[in-house]
Length: 398
Ligand SMILES: [Zn+2]
Image (cartoon, rainbow, N blue to C red; front, side, top):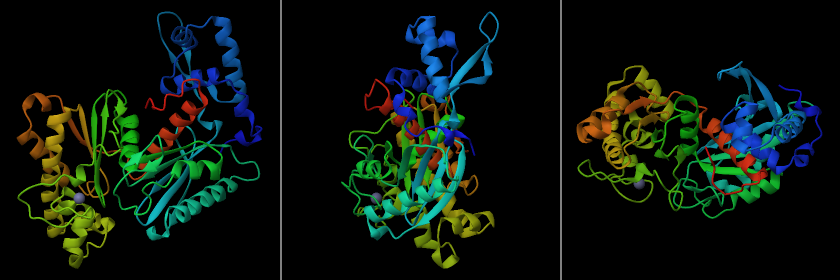
């Protein structure tokens, strides 16, 4: 826990949006004073007074790290992760994970909130908001300031409007103004994003920071994917880009999907489809699937091996279209050993032309179960800095 609570709550509003431009730049690329002078075409004196204000506010600090560029080493400047807290929420189908973290982001507190999905968005969001307040109160009488909130949802999301935009397991959320509701409730900027996009953001930031084109596939209860092109998330026109789970594959039977179509990748091999087929063997949910796989259950291992090839068929199409540098296979079902990954690998290398696979990294996700909250926190910090800076473009440079 940090001592940031001693600062007055309204201090952030005294910062100039131009100063926030510097802070936003440092958040993306920590650099030296000379680097900032160059990037912002500022005189030494002008930069000095802006930095003094940022140091005083606690938003920017000198890093322990230094940059060696010819002469003597110069200290890097960076955003101070302890300036305040971000609340990040991974909204699932039966419960949500709520975390409070620093701006870095480093998790400082966590709590699970159970709910019934049919309670509707208002009641579920209210239980999340009051949980965030209780968690802040747990920091004592002077809790660190809450700067922003990031919500990751299992649904296609228009992240600018902050709404669910189409079919998902979140029935009744379509068109509900989540962003405005939560901003009004919490009094801070709020970012709403699809959960697979959030997971991919965390994976990219931690393990592939310089990748320009990255394709992330999540195989959990459902199946989805996220696309980075030119280093940025690609959302598509309606926020539905990457909906790989509802690509229909021929020749594998036509089981009914949750979307109402038949033969979707999800209906063949998502966590819920494996549960449908192997419930009698004890595969009652994705946790049970992972446990049975680790225990060497032949039916579950067979389902994962076949599932890898089915997911791989869809991933092979995507690879031909996108020619990514990196494909990451994540999600709770994919985490059950190497079987799924090897199935994907087999299909991609069999079906895609060598030019697109020659330098391809096809790897398992490494961030783990906190990927969605960590990514949501990073996206929320980006949105908050954007909100407070001079250049509100509506797009996030993450
Ligand atoms: Zn479907």
